Image (tube, rainbow, N blue to C red; front, side):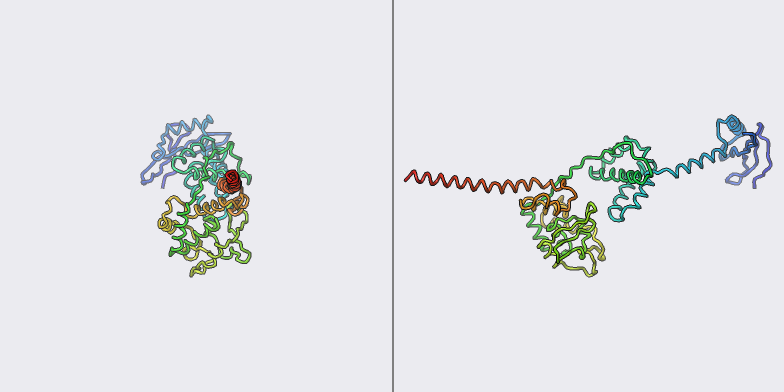
Amino acid sequence: MPSQERFKAGYKGVYYIWGTDARGKPERIYYIMYRKDGRQVQEKAGRAGKDNMTAAKARNLRIERLSGRAPSNKEKREREEAAKIAEAGKWTVDKLWEVYKENRKPGKSLKTDQGRYDNYIKDAFGEKEPCEIAPLDVDRLRFKLTKKLSPQTVKHVLNLFTWTVNYGVKKGLCGPLSFHVQKPTVDNTKTEDLTPDQLKALLDTLEKSENKQVANLMKLALYTGMRRSELFRLQWKDIDFDRGFIQIREPKGGRAAKIPLNDSARELLQNHPKTKHNSPFVFPGRGGKQRTDIKKAANTIKEAAGIPKDFRALHGLRHVYASMLASSGKVDMYVLQKLLTHKSPAMTQRYSHLRDDALKSASGVVSDFYNGMAAKAEEEKQKAENE
């Protein structure tokens, strides 16, 4: 046990007692005494070993306390406590994300965003309040991500960052960013398609495939243009055979949507084999749960059909469906938008040139008709002159 007997250290108001260090050896512990605001203050200056404290250093510390150049230990503790309280009250991006996340619907989308936050946002902005973030900070993050991620992924990350901050602003937890977050320009107009020969080869392969679940799932994508996630979530109760509609579960954009059950889709679904798990899902995954992927089986089918590797099985078939309708000339852009459940006509416009081509082709029939009439008249004229 350390001795509490005080020993003078050679300087006014400085003394030490004997204690022991971590190894149990004797060690001097220095204290200082001084008056402040009319009251006696006694505080620890430090240990000889651990803090490298000496009598001279303790004297200098006492002088600083007396002159007001350095706060007392008590004042330090009070300031540290005040700083902790202030820190706890700060709405950092980390804290905003936790609140924003709690109010998001659980699912794959949230899981994906959690990964984006942990991998790309947390280290850059997690401990900062929105008011502490400068445009240059976001620029640096964007440039860094652009080197290793696609423009679309970088846009998703920056969107998530702005959504998190904007949620805090909406709830009155923080102030808005003082600048606009610039995001990469993404070319979303790529339209995948198949030639008539490729489409025939794919349909033949799907017909022969032993994996009827995946084969029928791909066929339904082609027959209805449903999105990948919509096909995975499709349940038997979403199909109204009597009225001839498919209810889209959790549609993109959040609005309720339904699409017609055409004859091809109806026949496929009526003959589609149900799994032994008695699953509510039309195309269930393992154990009858919701399917999450078909990549392996789809790649096997694509390879057997001679389809290009970069053709996305489900997303590409949605494009094929839309392209066929647009190029038929029988479906206007408004109807096509409703069939594809696009929230706005902007995304549907990518197919407008196909409809234009069909309309031009149809218009050409009139020209052919009149040209044919003119040729016949000329032929009859020549015949009359020859007689």
